[in-house]
Image (cartoon, rainbow, N blue to C red; front, top):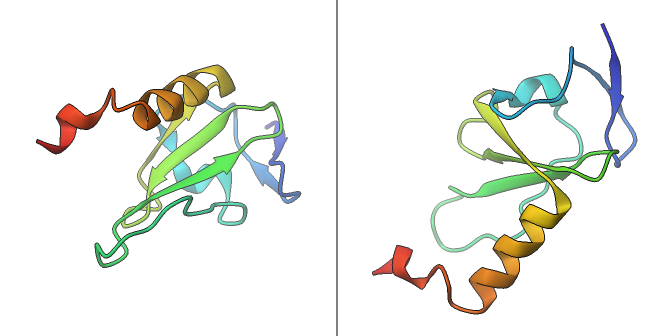
Length: 91
């Protein structure tokens, strides 16, 4: 079994990092809530992986699937959201 290191430092066990893998396999340390509102704590959590990719999980389901994005994909999403390209999701 390979050992994978997150950027926050702790080593966690996983066969390999892939989209949809159980988030628990990435460990419990290193997850951050980049934004949080008045939604009772129902937020996304993100973790930057050692290889530069970003893992995202639902905070209310920390054992659920982790979505894995490249840095370029996350940059495009954040910049698009800032530019209003995701506003249709709110209406």
